[in-house]
Length: 149
Image 1 (cartoon, rainbow, N blue to C red):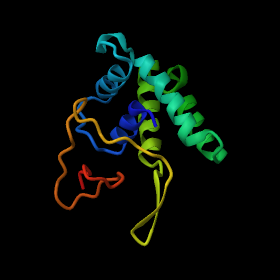
Image 2 (cartoon, rainbow, N blue to C red):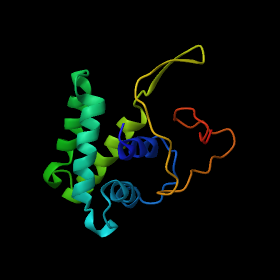
Image 3 (tube, helix red, strand yellow):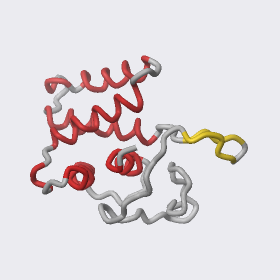
Image 4 (cartoon, rainbow, N blue to C red):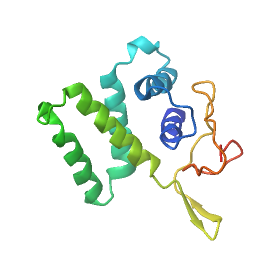
C-alpha cells in the first residue's frame, strides 16, 4: 500500500496525536505530494479521502456501506438542515475516518494472525507525533513494534 494511504488509515485508527483533523490530514497529503501545506485545500482532502474510502471500504463490498455513506452525504446537502456545505464536508470526512477506523486489516483467530488483508506501512512519526495512550485504554489498531497499546 502507498505510504500516504497507510498513514491515513493509521491516523483513522488513532496511531497519531490528533489536533485538527483537516490540518493533520493536510500534513499527511502534503508529504505524499511533496507540496506545501497551503497548496492543499479542504476540497483536495475530501476528494482524496473519497477515492481511498471507495477503494477500500465500498468497491466490491456490500451495498449497505455505499447506501449508508450516501445517506450521510445527502442528509447535509445544500444546508437542508441548517448546515453549510463546509459543515457537510467535515461531517462526511468524519464518516470516512470512522469507516477507515473500522476497516479490517488482518484476520485474527484465537489471538493469532491468520491472514494480512491490507499491508500497512509503519507509522511515520515525522509527519505527526505518536499518540499518547492512557493506561487501560484499548486502541483500535494493528499490532506492530510501534503499536501504542
